[in-house]
Image (cartoon, rainbow, N blue to C red; front, top):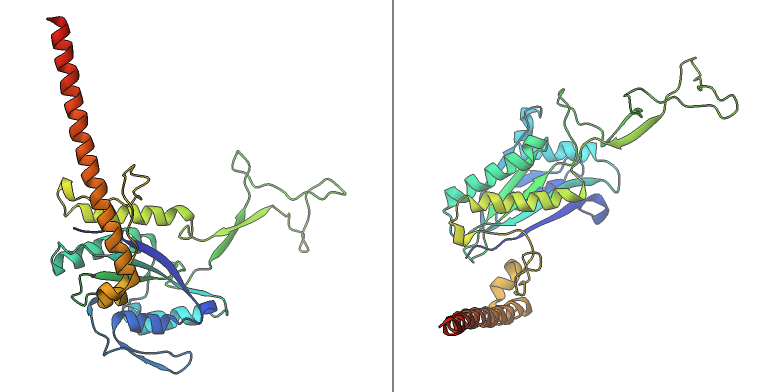
Length: 295
């Protein structure tokens, strides 16, 4: 049965990470890091089944080359603590064919990221170990209509309830301040250029992934992005195993934990079924008792 898994993390310089190295590893390619001159070669990596780059309309077509794309990102994100990319990792439904999995991810990436202005570079990994998944690398900056990277923040005027600019008042004269060039001064504010870092975005992406998957499933096999607690289900969630744990099998602590959780959930499900049967019997007895009293 398909499982729901979607995680989000940031690839950043402060962690000693490189956008080029990350893209090369996930795509299983050989890329040159123009910043350091180093070659990141992962052409021997197993399990990379498919890779694709999707771009918004305003992005330069040259960014269809991931080496050009991520080198351009590293040039722009030059600070030592710069965030280079956002990565979204999702588990793929094993019930779907490879073509269906690719179409599912392409449509999801287009709707949730590319149509919002992000450049997306994603790769599908599958080592035939029952854990097909996708790594989606996303740019952090918007691209302007000129094809240039936008600033992460933009400045604008503060407006009153009527949509008029609010003047800066000199506390001494109680009149509007005048700048060095004789220009009137207005209150300004700084805000982020896009809303991609908003906390509710991750929840939206999770819900959208469940909806995208469910288009391929019958009503009884629907995925739910919510936790068991939010669904009011008496089940214990399993933990993410990962490729290494799956390869170790029963020798892995994570695999053993999940086996124990699945056994407990099976018992809980059995008890729930028995409880439902008891409630049905109770309702039948109540109905019989009412019938006897009426007689």
